[in-house]
Image (tube, rainbow, N blue to C red; front, top):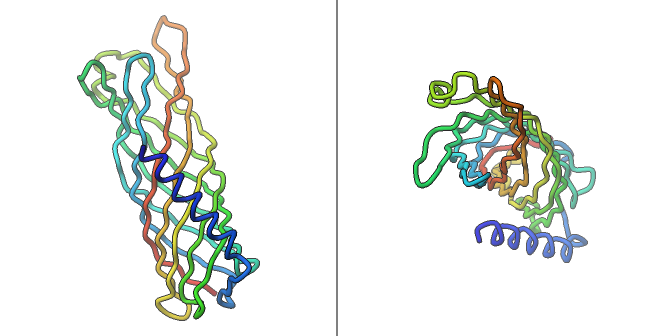
Length: 215
C-alpha cells in the first residue's frame, strides 16, 4: 500500500508539472552544488520462506544540479549508506549481515516556479547504479564457518518529487522524495555445495532534506 501511495503522488506531481511547465519562470542560475541527508526505508523480500528485512538508516548524499533551461534540470547524486539485513524464519529473526551501498543516481526533473522565482516544485525520474558490498554476520559465520555471501553491483530506476526554496540569493533549502526500484544478486557458496544466486529486493523510499548553492 505504501508503494502505491508514493507512486501515485509522484505521478500526480508529474502530471501537474506537465500541465504548468509552459508557465515556468526560474532564476538566472544554471548550476547547483548541494548536500543532503535522506531517511532510507527499504522494503523486505521473501525467498524460499525466509524473509529478508533491511533496517531503516540514513543515507549521506552529495549532488550536482544543472539547469539547461528554467523548467528542466538534471541532478547527479552520489550517496553512501549501510544497513543491517535481518533474516526471519517462522517468526525467529536473526542478523543476516550488513550491506554497504554507494548509489550513483541521475535524475531528470521538471520544474514549476513561483512568480518571484524563490520557490519551485519538481517531479521526475531517472536511473541509478548501485555499488554494493555485503558482510555476513558473525552469527551466520559461527553456524556455517564455510559460508560465503557476496552482493553484486546493481542497476535500478526511480521516481522523484520535491521542492526547493531560496533562503538567500544563491542558497536553497531542498526537500526531496524518491522511490527506488533496485534488486541485487547475492551469490552464496558453502564448502562442498554448488554455489547459488538469489535476488534480494532492495526497493526503498527516501525522504531527504538538504541545502544547495546555485551559481
